[in-house]
Length: 172
Image (cartoon, rainbow, N blue to C red; front, side):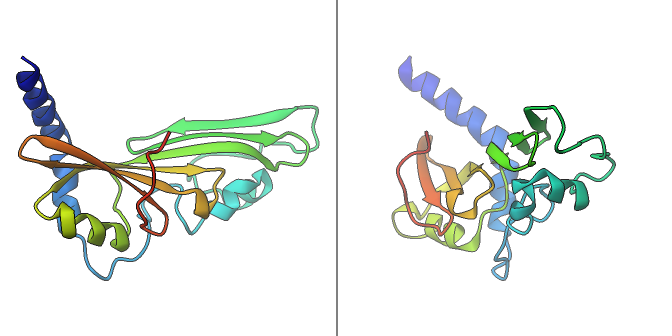
């Protein structure tokens, strides 16, 4: 019964994440950066650290951030949102607009080349990526962590990486 449940779970994962695995395998070797189609990426992390910057360089086209009034009576502003591949939760000081804390979760994104190279060589040869997650804390580049789910013959393996592609302990 346990084996049957594991096989069903593996099949569900493969069917759910197959498009991601195929898109990753076609990744161009010259690719060396984050997916620019995501609202939050390496090129704009700095701007999410302060509400004034977000008001000025609004990455969310079609939204109006002019209602954000710094130096107001508000203790803090909470910015949160979800899209197909991204989740954001951020708290900002109401007077200064400075970031208090934030977490960004991005799923099934295009991985950096160094991580793609690691998961396709050595002990990972023959394994297929079933999905991935990137977690960014406080919009700091050095806080970025990746979780990569690999599958082979019904067996699952989860690998964790830092922003430099080095293997790390599991994300908690």
